[in-house]
Length: 402
Ligand code: F0G
Image 1 (spheres, rainbow, N blue to C red):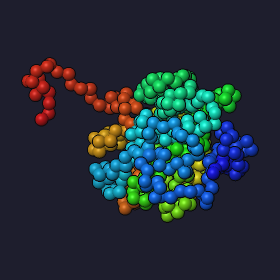
Image 2 (cartoon, rainbow, N blue to C red):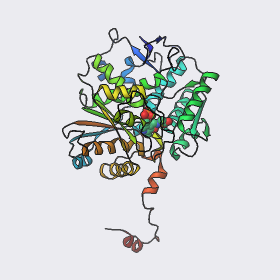
Image 3 (cartoon, rainbow, N blue to C red):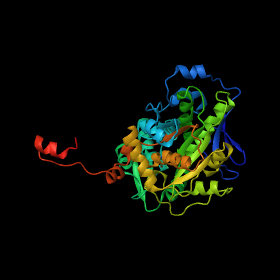
Image 4 (cartoon, rainbow, N blue to C red):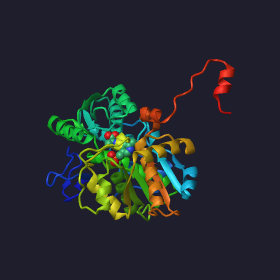
């Protein structure tokens, strides 16, 4: 059994309450399980396929889930990049291999299942793109209407295409993501739509399974460090929460150092960590090529800062050039196609190695969060267009570098 608990003042709420922030202090809520009485064992998990629902005892859904078979994503060892960095234990968990091409699917299978269980008739979110693509698909699978709010002109093409094709009502606002989130929150509370941004505690329950899978894929051991790109700071908080639960259950014996990476033009969490601020100072005009993490006021900052600080992790920012260089390296040296925000995590590792923060004997798992095809325009801008030639062999031979 579980209940909702305020992460700030510890007020508790029944699981069936439709509530996103604490009625007493306004801070976020988290689902808390009674781990002592939970009937869960690693043997049971190991008998099930690697996927979000392998871990169903630690998820809030009680009935049948709304699922598109999410999770079970590959954990790749980065051999060439690892060798360049002098890091033999460098891995990438490729969340772009989920049904809609990002880790959001793990959250949405749980979040939309809960929407159905709670009797909600419509769902909504604000998004820098991936959340909207994922929610649109899961709402379609559940057969319920979906509204998404996007920052106009700042969402990658593939993500808008997905939200439209899966039948969401897609609204672009003349404002940034942070404003879109405020607006959709208000809309949901006043008009009874179910809010599926990462303020929703159930959505984050699904995302914590990234960490569970990493442990299982590493043979039951925790890595020394987990590195995640940070936007709204929900994912790093979710993975940390899940790993704490595994530690409390005695399934792993230590916590990885939680490490967040932001873009240089959008780095409020990094500032808070570097300056040891108790609270985050929002960035009013976030800007970066990694539009997925173009967020100035991350709503999960309180949880994320605790995750980073209590595990001895850190946060670092990377420039747009560093992000794009790593996107190309992952694609060309490892065969791994990710979108810019995802490359930020590995770019952050490169920088932390150079700064001497990461030891070369550490085992480091980067979460690469979304697929290359999400943002084809940023890809095409970095590459030379194909050579167009006459349709004869001579032209082909003169065009090729053989
Ligand atoms: N990587 C990608 C590809 C994302 O789409 C996001 C967030 C993040 C990283 C950061 O995760 O917000 O939990 O810290 N995208 C959200 C969206 C905001 O609307 O799709 P976070």
